[in-house]
Length: 398
Image (cartoon, rainbow, N blue to C red; front, top):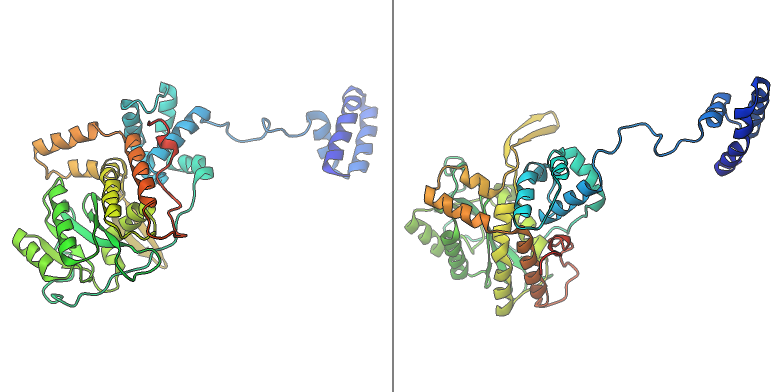
């Protein structure tokens, strides 16, 4: 007998069982046991209590209603679907920012429940909405032999990693599926102490162009540029950049050849900021360069003010396992304010800039600029980014 048949049979005899005396109940029990093959205790439970229902299952009742889940998803989308460990400590601030700009309206009870969610709960609630990303890129770095003896490999003595101003730098190629011919690049820079990111589109990878982009980044930073650390590519290891650093009093170091972990901070941003946005298409026109930098204008504000980062505090090895301990997630903006290197006027200017930023509007600007950039791709590639900034977070923006 099928499970559905058993259910119908039990429903048919339950009335007689409940109304019968002891003798009748015993006869019905024997009959049902013989027909279904169930244990007598199981039959008694089905006849007296009925089948298990969703409401009758054990476990805690759901703590968070539809309104809380919808609010969490909206905030998560606005935060570029960041991981729960980064999102959880940033939730109260991001909710406050969205409410300040009229992008989110929550009842006090919903807001209180949302802001007290744990990392595990956020993971569980958002699990159905998460997606996977892209393939790994390939390298286009060609080693530069000049000045290697003059530019030292970075050591702990060269840099003060706790002080803002020491940048890891790298180039990301927009060459499509072939490195032949001319193509645009992105100069990617990240401050090791705060995680502050600046990106610039570059016309090719010539020494003068790359050096000019680095100079622009230095002027754009809200703190003094104190050090640069690059790979061994000839676009960085050259007399022009070396002379610029000597003249400006900038510490210039390089990573070990073929050791990408030496520049782990910028390598991570190459993926999370550049590749997730621009993808792997080929761009080689002046129009594409202009549009690429239009994409990067709001990206800097969005990443630095609304994307918290976690920094490794220490790690220990126990046999084959490595245990890593990270600090609480903070945005580069918050880390910079807490560094103590900014004068009061600089802090006030940075806070005023933060108050005027609307993350939802920034996302809308990024997506609109990306749509125009993708139409300028030199060739149609099968490796367009599968993850863009979420559309759901920008629907309210005209």
